[in-house]
Length: 338
Ligand code: NAP
Image (tube, rainbow, N blue to C red; front, side, top):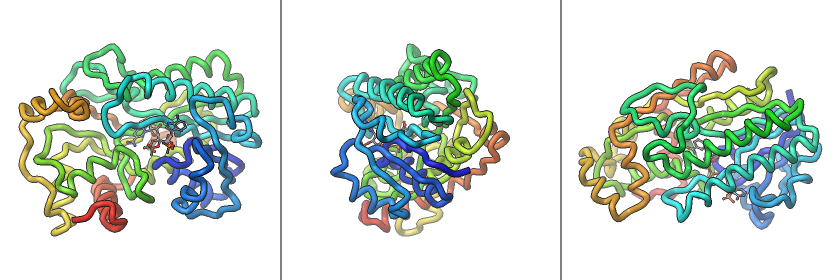
């Protein structure tokens, strides 16, 4: 299938790979960015067939520009949502744009006669707020935003997806809505404006971590996340579906081991020692960004992607390839100097 699709947030990491794949497969793509002042720079980074890509200025917090952005589109991939590198001043700085942006994109999509709407949610809307050390979660689970140690980003993704689903149930009409719920997205970066999720590999190879904290995350490749979005945009009968996008759950020590094994001397700054929990908790008393991860110490949130594999034939690449490609691109682009 091809046609015209709106991908929101064209300056973003996942959106960039999604736009590339859609254009390579013959789609015309509309994309939003907050200001057209960035259009030339984003076009340069994407390096796709210019004639198939149109830019529109639109903010998640404002109606201006959305009607033009979605006009003529049969499909929408709503990807834009704030993803902070550290702590935020107030949780509403994330929650309001995430939730209002999703509802805004849905409203304008329906008014324009869009048939299919795929929203990028997160495992942050699935696997948090449950006080278990180790647990497996599926698409049937939801984050409990009132549970212990649920950070503002997880609240923003949960509230946005819930609000979107409620709106679709009440007002969506014939528009088909589903979500992709990725774990931590890694992989090659297209330029210096990459997602906060890349920071973990950047810090490991640049030597800015004194040791390896005892926490982990599900890993998924940005190219595979883009591919899963395209599969969902193309597929029939997706109404209400949720698709976890995740490969294996890896501890920081596992990621470090892959980097050391595969990068040789370029991994010389990757720490080998464990960072004691007590030390991390002490630093967290003064550093809100570190406080965000202390809740993850010792936890294992397993989020298998069986549903995406079985329903959409999705086959993610090996996590080691993703981790090495992340590091390689950061080094090759001079983002990390060794
Ligand atoms: P990213 O590179 O930071 O992209 C976020 C995008 O959202 C950017 O284009 C950003 O625009 C846009 N945005 C933020 N606030 C906005 C606002 N008020 N108005 C308009 N646009 C706004 O992060 P990403 O990793 O590609 O994330 C894309 C989506 O995937 C998000 O929904 C995120 O929650 C989800 N996700 C990401 C991960 C991950 O590990 N990276 C995992 C699960 C889910 P600017 O460039 O102007 O800031």
